[in-house]
Amino acid sequence: MNNDTYIINTVEMFGLCGSGKTTIQSNCNIDKIVTIYNPIPISAIHTYIFTAYIIAKIFVISPIISFRFLCDRQSRKLLLKLGLRVGGIFKRRNIYRDSDIFLRDSGVLMPFLSAIIEESWEWNEACVLLLFMVLPVPKKAIFVSVEPSVAYVRYIERNKNKSISQDLFCLANEFCQFLYILLESKGVKMIKVDNNVSVKCSFLSDKLNEE
Image 1 (tube, rainbow, N blue to C red):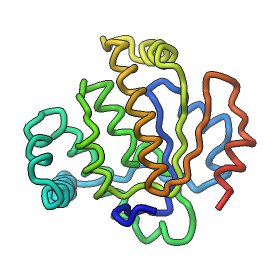
Image 2 (image 1 turned 90 degrees about the vertical axis):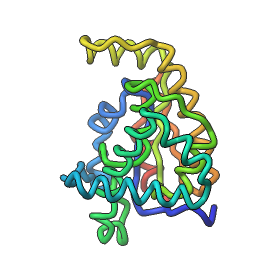
Image 3 (image 1 turned 180 degrees about the vertical axis):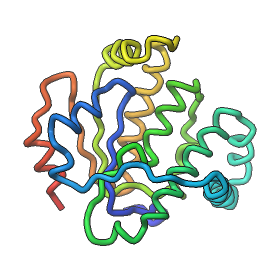
Image 4 (image 1 turned 120 degrees about the horizontal axis):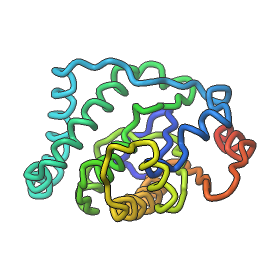
């Protein structure tokens, strides 16, 4: 396990927007396997405080990469989202000690994918590696894998008023593959679900119950 990694007793699910994460949670009754926590209100001032905390931590490690990161508008927006998520995680830190908690729409993984797809964020390995040296990561992560073209069609059907290039889904898919390897190297238990075929809920349940 990487000594620079702060792992907490949580479970996060990530994958492309439109990959079927919400459907899997519902169909497989995730709430009967692990305790689910939804986002909790965080004030604007606390969001800024935790964003500043992240910035200070990465700046100590690499001032040059941090400065370049902060010069990018999309990167700054991502930092605010991460500050909001980290604030929520720390606000609930006492409940993570006894059992695994499923963070629904309140973990640190999906903001990266949303930034790529919805904000056209141009990610690079150096910045991502730096951020994951300071972000709290889940004990277990579920990667919902699906072809970018399939996720794109689902996303457009769900968000008819948005105009987004399919190329962004391909870039986000590359990030998913990178993130999977990165988290695995940090000691996170990875669970890959192929949503291109029928998902076996028993497989997911067994994996989540494993220690």
